[in-house]
Length: 441
Image 1 (cartoon, rainbow, N blue to C red):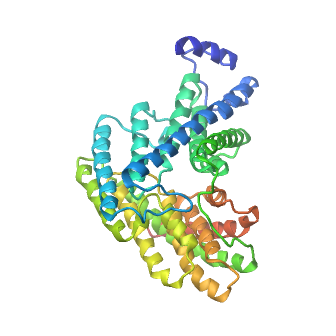
Image 2 (cartoon, one colour):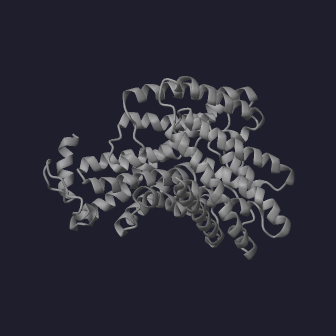
Image 3 (cartoon, rainbow, N blue to C red):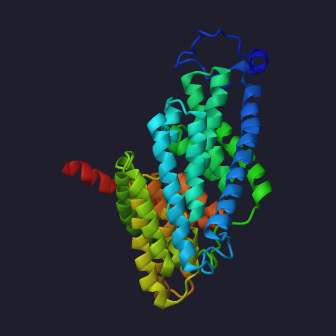
């Protein structure tokens, strides 16, 4: 059936070249040609709709795994699994990591699963392997493993975009565009963050701010976010109170930005080390279960360690008591260590929301000192500013990080000033650190 539809559909879309034709890399993009208007609409509305539905399905699966494995579903008002018995916290993440280790070992023996960036670069993403790979990430996060869930929807979105491009027989350049747009839309659909999804495609994957790229990325992310949020809701991901703009907060941004840049530079170095040395051999069969057990044991007394970091970040945003300072400092170190070692043990997953959690803890710690001098500034606002700055450096994506934190907190657009200032100074500081590191080598 697909073989009958494909030639007809491509004719409607203005593509009439033969099987052996290859578009030159310097040729005008298919979407910029006279017949590219309708295909652009198909990408925005069609691809956006499909990826939005996939993102909603992944969000639903996360809820299912949290319900039946961990026994607690994280929500805005109830982010931490305090009510779950200690034995279930241990069992959930340990059993899930054991199952995931076996499946990942089996899959990786059979075929290579390329990353989203590799898929954009042209590596073929196998359908079955990529889907299983993404579902395993949702599975272990739902059970409590300390990694982010954002990589899974990106992979599904990139997979859909790549297969659509292959069906249309697009050039390598256009295939990269559609694959990246799909990955950004997957990100947007899960978090209801269309600007962050667009910037992920434009800033991180493509490094291209051309008009056609921005239009396709933004439009597809908007549709995906609309579809996804229509199914799983439009509630903000983080609740931060006291977001009032003031010169005192801007001054805090000037100080917190460089500090967050230094800390995030170390965080990124550790996660990069873990990713490069992530266990791919048969040793994953014991390394990942042991790491799951270690996470569960920590969660007996500190359940905030579980999952993608939302619980810990929300705790930092809510904190008002000075006695929580040792806890925040301890959890900053533990969340970083748990995330790094989970990836090192062979798990696949993101580090975005764990980075937000670590940055929020850092910001809250600094906020206690700042609010002692300037009581009109809230600790939550300090934590938000620092978390955005930390995220920007850890992801090397200042635009994406700024949009992401504003969208997930439903902050006023005026809060772009302190967040953007801290993000800029954080990235400048980290780049200075990188230049020093290269100079020493």
